[in-house]
Length: 277
Image (tube, rainbow, N blue to C red; front, side, top):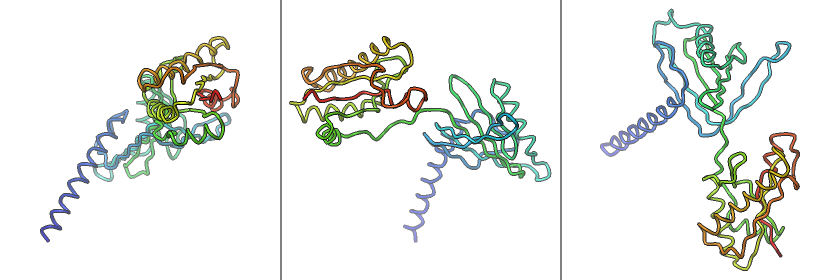
C-alpha cells in the first residue's frame, strides 16, 4: 500500500510538473491578456500543426481556408458569478478591438471570430470561440515552416544512386536569395557525407536549381553558389575529398513543376546529386 501510494504521488507530481511546463510554454505564445475574472484551464502547444479559418468574401459569403505553423490553443474559464458572465459579443468585440489596435483585422464573426495580425515580422491567424458560458478558447497559428527531422539516410541515397544515378534533395535549406546553408540542413548533409565516405570511388556533381524569382542570370549564379556551399560544407567539415565533388548550377533551366504557384516554386528549389559515371 505504501509502495502504491508513493508511486501514485510520484506520478501525480510528474504529471503536474509536465502540465505546468506545457501551460507555461503555451501561455508564452499568447498575444493578449485574458478578460478579467478568467483563468487558463486548458492549454495545448504544437511546434507545427494546422487550423481551419473563415473569412468573408465578396457577396457576404464565407470562405474556409487552412493555415499551418506554430499552434497554441488556450481555454479560459469564467471565475465570477454566473449571472455576470460576459456575453459572446463582449468577448469577440474585446478581441477585435485589441487586434485592430495593433494593425490587425477581423476576417469573419459569427458563432466564432477570426482575425489576421502582422506583429514583430510574424503573421498570426487567430480564432476565438465561446459557447455563451463565459468560457472561451483562443487558437493561434503563427505562420512558420515545418522543421524537417526525417531525412534520407546514407543507405537510401546509395540505393537511389545505384538505380537512378541521381538523388534530389529538398532538405538543404537557404534563406531567400542567399547561399549560406541553414542549420536545419546539417542532418541531411551528414548522410550525404556518410554515403560518399562509404563510396570513395564515387565522383558526383552537386547541382543547384532555383525557381524563377529574379533574373535568369542571377538565378544561374545563385544556383551555383548554393551548390558550392554544399561542396564546401562537405569538404571542410566532413572530410570529403574535393576530387569527389563538382559544383554546378543551372538556375531556372530544369524545372520539375510550374513556377506559377508557390508549391511549384518550392519543388523547383532543390539540390541534385548526379553521378559522373
